[in-house]
Image (cartoon, rainbow, N blue to C red; front, side, top):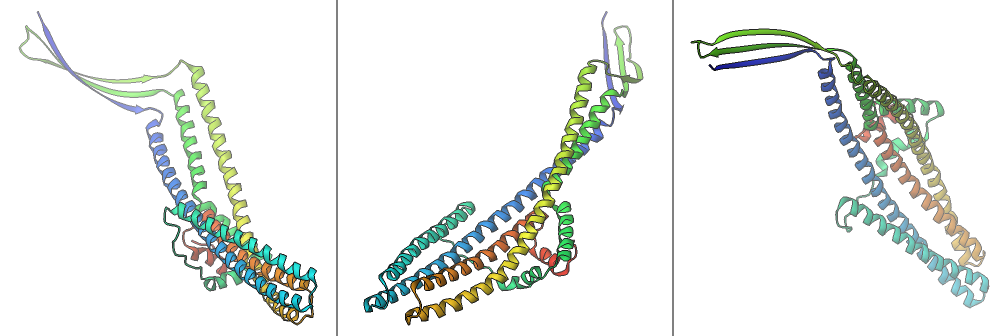
Length: 362
């Protein structure tokens, strides 16, 4: 005698501690983290390219300033040679001028080297040929924001910083990643807690049986409601719960630390931008004074009224003022670029609106 049997069983979990829902939420947060990571990389790349590009422009300007300073020193050296030949200049003053001219040649070589290195650094980063064409920054378009930053008082600066911090907290992708990590840790902790709850399943089984003596199959349907509870190993379950709880505390600390660091970084770059803006104004005035002084000293030296030391001091003053003016302008651009990255902004007009209108950028 033989028999045959066919059965089909379907099982549907009714309650499993919401692990499925939590898993879906965790997956979505992981997708968000991937998006935020991409956004962060884009902002970092933009800021790095701008920083390197500004470095090329700055070093190019400093090289030109150094070259003009060298040319002026050579011209003064010729004048000193004529005066020394005529006996109207002492040997010590003549050697002083010659020494200064030699020093300027070394400075120019260094400035030229800095320009070449920064240019190659940018070319290597962009994977392009180092003979690329430079486009100068239109600083005249930045005059309104520069003048605005120069004229801010302490109260106005405080309000703008508060708005900038709010924008940064809402838009900084790195902080978004930390916030998403906190939520993922919460989900993981919830999943670990569900291990202490039972799971309930509903199953339905259809079976068809037939023996050699039967002409037809006999049908039987069974509905089963079952529950399960994990008793062992309890210690491992508790250890897992403690570990996930510690991970949540760590994620929260990381977020708070990242938020505090972001606030400090925004404040630092904001005041660096304001400082650079004010330095642009002061160095512009100093440069005008230094140019006027140098021209006067040059005429007086050619006339034999002053010594070489007075002329060389005027040269140093002019070179320092021109270098400071150039550095201040590019410090402003670097601070602006860094502030954009921290606040999660792509359009600089939004940052300028924050300064010009003193209102939060949407």
